[in-house]
Image 1: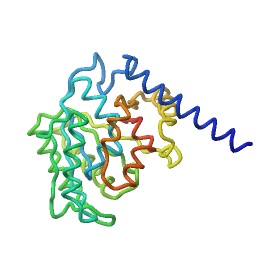
Image 2: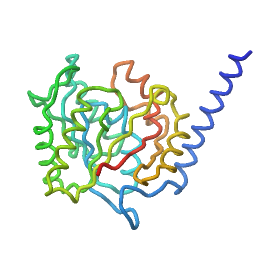
Image 3: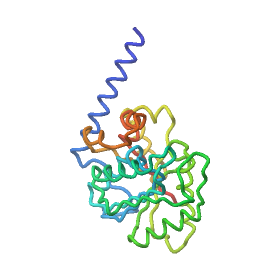
Length: 254
């Protein structure tokens, strides 16, 4: 009987959370963020990721929020994700996902650098990453960069290396005008709580004392969500049950 009560409670929370997301999709109540003052304005945004499918598995709420509000979004993917020998397939899937996420394919760049190959234990040089990111910032007139935090959501070393590459970039005083934001990693329980985590994320953003953490809810329909992610089954399951599919918390890097 106790287990039944727990299951019913979780189902109610899940449904209530989905209704919350649906409500936000049709309201203007989300805080206008990613600026230091004044109204929210169109930005040239660069999303820096490590592998194809990172955009769908972790950053969908952020991408959707920004694209719907007129931001000019670019995606820089540091590898083809070829650890399992399907790099070309994953690269194609990133292009398909970018179409669903309304990011022009010409603004999606996937690298296949010999020193930036996918894999656990394959360390990426932060200075090389910084150089590549800097070139993209200059070429595309970027004024806002978004990437992983120092844990990288899943603890993958390539995610963490990308974060360090962006950190390295911040040491360059010539790019001080560029805002940099990181996706906040959560505990494993929150990570796999699906839409239920939106309540904790909203509270976290609301009561963060420094005022530099902001929360985005996903405004994509469930049909569109199912179009994202790799053909590998575990990634499809991740997209369905991960809290990152439904909500992102971003923290500004100073």
